[in-house]
Image 1 (cartoon, rainbow, N blue to C red):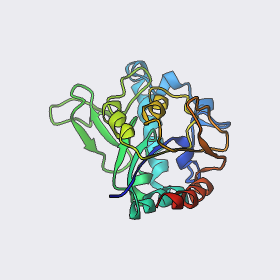
Image 2 (cartoon, rainbow, N blue to C red; image 1 turned 120 degrees about the horizontal axis):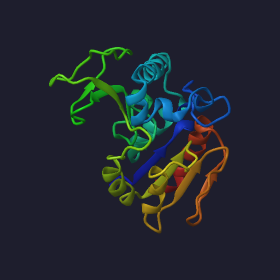
Image 3 (cartoon, rainbow, N blue to C red; image 1 turned 120 degrees about the vertical axis):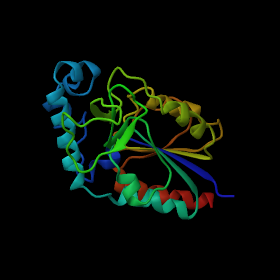
Image 4 (tube, rainbow, N blue to C red; image 1 turned 60 degrees about the horizontal axis):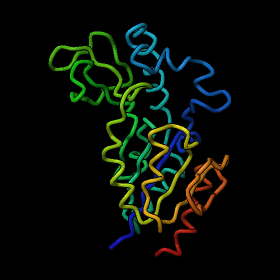
Length: 229
């Protein structure tokens, strides 16, 4: 039976693909107030700005490609049972070939009903417009978990982490909860690898840090994983 690798990825995973991060120098939060574009209050107060913000993100995503880090994680499926849990809303893991991806914070290329959140649709193209309605006649909104909203995918993420034989963190500061708390659901004897040039805080036990960006870090990880085969 293949060993199970669970990988938690954050914004640094997609940065080398050209996806702008939110918290880094020059990031999106320097350009936008988070509460004005990524909260239920923002949608209520200025839905035009929110719509434009996510349309722009979607348009940018169309011109981005998976980087070597995404591809390297997908190729791990040749030897391991790999489950990706991502905080990212892009589809670069899927495009790289990863077959099991759980999105904690929603998906940029999907939209959902404002009244019936279970009605989720693939958006055709990059632009969501006012007047785009669900099958029950209600406006569609970005299928994104905004600040102040619950993260329903955590219900699925926790047992996945609990089942890991190896746990990997790539490109996340581990400052955003509840996602950052997932590392604490690993079994005590599970090896943990953290790939990030900034060495995020992991107050747990011995952790193998790979102080590289995603592309170089995943390459190092794959070498280290040879000892588990």
